Length: 603
Image 1 (cartoon, rainbow, N blue to C red):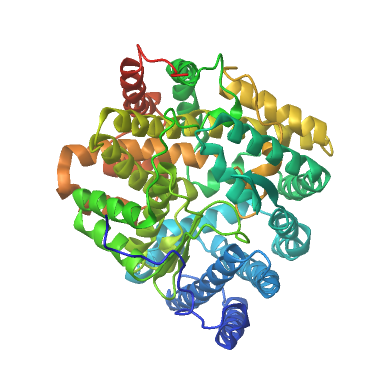
Image 2 (cartoon, rainbow, N blue to C red):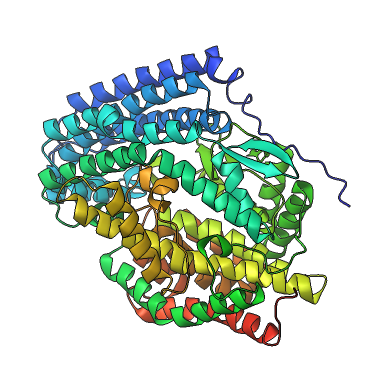
């Protein structure tokens, strides 16, 4: 038994004591607002450089941007944590609305700055970037300068930003409000318990099929009861996005997500084509799993089921110590960071009602700390999720001393760091299993993640791509949303299941997040890209940690194609890289099929 006792609730008071009633937090936001006004004044008064003036004015503005950005991110992170730990925190909701407005104001200020950058003559611009302070920001500044040329004139972009507060982001907030008010009544050993949808979803990994089916059916009913509301939120936020694209002259709905993720479409297609080429063996895995569970075919709620009736519960402390140990095998810095996160209560993991569903990691750049949110119920998947979120946190940790503008790494490389950390722990779990049954159980848990990235995430991508094409024609009905969802799931899972999840479009938060569109393919990118990194790590041993940190520190200042070329020596537009990464997952499935060849369900 472990002797360590880590807190399962996070410490937010070190940022601002008193939660959403904190006077210190209110003052901090006011100071942020004041700094933003100063930045706005600087940008408006700045005259476009000519060959006769130097880079000092731009450096001054960049300094203002850095300070304002850090404070706004700090404030947003604090409010996100308050809302996640207590969905009924109304003051947190009010603060979020205020921060959304500040975010819109900052976007307008930066658009003004970007448009002025775009008007600088090329020769003058190149001279400016030679300044040592700005040269370190050359990728980001060039990116901003070029992308603004594809947007609307300043006044119209400012209007879009302002209208987005109540006409776009508000729909995402409405979704959160509706979900936060939902609950499911489940029978727990004869006792009726009211659970949040997040708590109920954790029950889908139960070893009892009747339990899984009951949870699935009740969750489906809960989503169905609110289907009209969710139909409204999804249609309106996507409609706002499409109208913005139309006025900018953007026909391809993938343009913005690809831009945000600093990758090209050829890379995206190479990745999906490689996955489709190798899906057949994962279908064999699903078929074998069905056989092990005594079923003809799996249903949606069976995908995450354990193949053994002996549920392997892992206490939070044991899970934490295992993560620390496995990170230590990779490198001392990652292990020391994880230990600090546990010891200083950076993690909210308590299994209680009133919390938001899901998990996330958020950064406090002004304090140079992070916070991790999840609901821990003791499953091996929970341990993997915890490692996943700590991977995000470590990524931010190694970026803390870089210029804030160089810390804005894209979502796909963010998912690289998280899935790399998850892979370290998952692989170690299999290798250090105490017996053959546990080893098989952990191997299967590891394969489940491959299925999630190759099939579940693919279904989300297919759904969202087709949904946006339908939305261009007008409002999409709830019935059509369900049909699009199920069609995408059938295709992504190669029609291998006998029951799907038609309300997935409503239940999946990612479809309703307004910060980034297409919150799906970056997960799969990160998973496979991390496998390429993991292979390098295995070849290099503990010496690889510094190279890994160097790669992470470059994630905010180059495209993913250039990142892969520089640090891995590979071409991401070539399907060969993706297939070599998938091969690692294929070997897991081949071993699983070999180990279970003569197995059958004991009934």
